[in-house]
Image: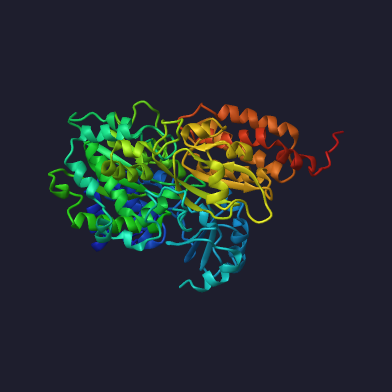
Length: 166
Length: 437
């Protein structure tokens, strides 16, 4: 039984966020087209896209929760489970790989205490993943930490970057 | 210009002229630099005349396919009573490519102006700029520039007082390479999984929301204001003396094992050898180039000899065993073994396959397993034949070309750099074979 059914779920689309969604709906000829933006609103508000979040989006856009889940699972940027407070994505695709991206990835894994990729550190602070091409290959290695995009990261810069996170 | 480096004298900085210049970002300074003059001119022309000018300029799609832009626009039937749509493809995700990112970061108004002219030319009242979700900074810059342009009446109802409606919206992607494929992008925009569609129908007939649609790359649209301002023949004069089929300038993103990675803009037909050694500074100290990929990871790998003989235009690269593609130049030096590089490329495609076609879903996964096995020292010579056979089954047989793109580095890698594979196979780890009773 999900929280939406038991009444413990706090709806996302209220107040300012409801207005934001209504405004989005004016941009497209169909309600469904607002699905990706609506999921972004849910993730920005709650840190991830829960099953209850999917149910709420489904109701708002007149589609089934199963349909929404089908879309959510297609796109890698929607978190289907809670992640660390600092979500660290290291680009390791071929152009960065030949410039030392794997060492950067390992430096993050070590310094954050995350034992492996995709696993959140025991203090809940960090999750480190490999990401496919971040589109900044000339500035290898690019790293994204939440919304922050950092260029030219080397293993030596990792401790300083982590210390600078709020 | 070679951002983040200073402009090189041999560059032709048209789109990249203001890279690195924070002044160019705001509407006021953009107008002082001559911005939105082309839109004003265009709104005083008929849409058909704009299409003719763009056709005559020889501008071709800069996203990878190189299709003539004016011709693409001419497929949109005027006054068919249907709503038309323009989509600006800013889902730049091709490994090795980071040019659209710089265009949006530094000159967001150039993109808006190109979109507005394009929308007017194809009779579209709505344009969506589909930007990949990871591009947080370009997303912010484009949103901010659009707010300025709307407030100034440049876009919206009655754009620049012309009576024409041109609404432009940013649509944020959510992490899927395949959404850069135009029909997948339309599905994604509609709120669906980003699976490519079977063509026909082509987008100009039934595109996004089932309506006539044109999809152009950021760099293509950003070139349009220059063509309107200076004329088709001015743009067309940038070409190789013996090849008028590729015109204008092209932005190249340069990365990998090279001294000065960055974005460079040169006229069509520029010698690739001068580009690599002169503009980009050549190999790292004590190293030599081993392999070059000129157009993003989906195009065939070149040997250094092939690269050094290539003129940089659509036909020039084809004549030397590869394609211009997106202009993402990836340089690999002699310190690398290409097998590891190709294994990681295959893993990329396996991760990004939408999985609707069997050849791609299975082919990308098995290719990855086998190339990774070879890279780990557990491969055999037969594996190379197996890889080529899988690649053959992956080429030309699927809805979109992601499958072909995965096969490309494998085939060109095995045929041109076989010794890299063989050196790993020769040193194969010998596991004891269990003896069956």
